[in-house]
Image (cartoon, rainbow, N blue to C red; front, side, top):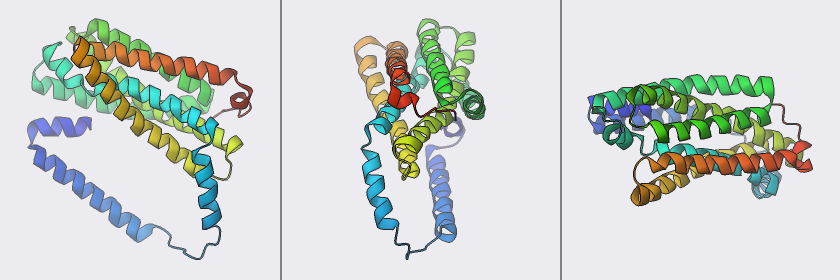
Length: 250
């Protein structure tokens, strides 16, 4: 998305949409050519039922709920980051596009770092580290949105932390599935992906509501509150025997 934002400032938006469509077509053809097509597997129906039950497992839903809150907080701000940069930080459109490109680069770095942190410290510790970092950065952006040097730094850190959350949160939910729904780890992973997308949608709604009521910069502290709720819920889960028993070590 950040790369598309930058290219959109250089090229027309139609070119970007054509590139997205072309990428999707390549993916579709790859799946069509390479996906296994064994239709005689008698376990498919049983696996479908196990997967359906796993979708409503309360512990998996609670784990995915952390994902929803984390991404709601991050995207309450990120959805409206361009107007903040243009109207509050007072940068040019080209500078805003460069900052978004920097966000994307840091997101890639953060994704790798988040995976390594999860391997070293375990999923619980990695998720908590990312959540606390997100809350701090969102509050810092709320206080520093008018400062270009600080926004350069904070926008990059926001990208790193937002995408460091991906492997940590995914590993945590899959770890829960090993204990509470071992027959459907793929469904658990999919449930968490739904949590990411649900969080993005919820964050956009929260940010839009706060923007209308309290102005652009309010999206940052509203996002911090959402992440703060995730921290509280995470602490509660970490104290519960049903979650502790999973020994989520990545």
